[in-house]
Length: 191
Image (tube, rainbow, N blue to C red):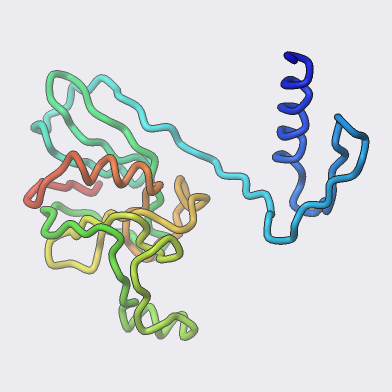
């Protein structure tokens, strides 16, 4: 039984790590080829792990610090600790820094691309309802009266990259965690 389970696990692992260009794999149990349905294409996602770290900085508990150079977001918890998350940041020419407060929190927010963005990318819709395909992802934390947000993403590979138009992107599971920990009025410092 253990041998069968091990072989089955190996078969699943072999199928899961197949290159996107491969259209079949060999089943190690039967020796037969396994045709992968065309809708299943491997996506390698480089996940930056969420971590609890020591924090000895000057900021008060419940402060969010966004380090765009490091591509990390910190939530200061107090007691000498913080949570560190991986983020995606603004691409060259769209960087900014400053201090805001979270003015709104939204679950599965809809998205209306700003006019400036529509001029650069005319194929964008006028409005996209919230959902898994929405670029804002599972949660959005609005920063003051600006157009900027800390939000989830429908593109997990953008985390750790400089690709946005100024917003701070997070993995959906990370933005949900942050969303549940912060309140409207939380101070956000973008470095």
